[in-house]
Image (cartoon, rainbow, N blue to C red; front, top):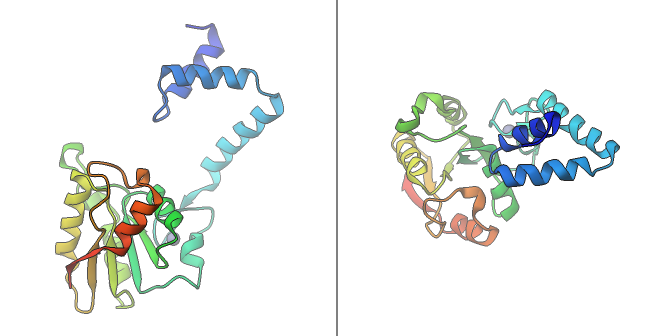
Length: 199
Ligand SMILES: [Zn+2]
């Protein structure tokens, strides 16, 4: 335990995901040794990001505008939508440079244990995007774990529409893992080898 504000800093850092007590202490001491200017900049960015960043009204990705950069990009194909759980999965797939369509961020996965049902996810918004027939393929890229698989099978049953192909990323992704932790090569291959589950 440290005196007052130092301990407060360690406690706050320790509440962040993936930061244990030792890491929190290490970061706190790093901050104590950093130039005041740099620390102010970090504090500003933390406040700014919370104020400015919101979710894209179309796909649910993070953005500073009404629509995210991907939805605004006219070079992206509107015929394909890749469905992911979180915005961080969009970043993971973008790094593979394998996909030129649009995304749809669900905001999680179906998980009865955590009380998350289909109505808690952005599934209604997805159905609305499919209504005009522009989209001809939906690629389900939920995580290769229990919740992700449950969500994928729910969606594949739901997305039965004429002229719509539903595909799921190929296996080869580490089972039980998170999409964001897959390396670019594995994720890229999973994209190329996606299989049709509907249509
Ligand atoms: Zn968007």
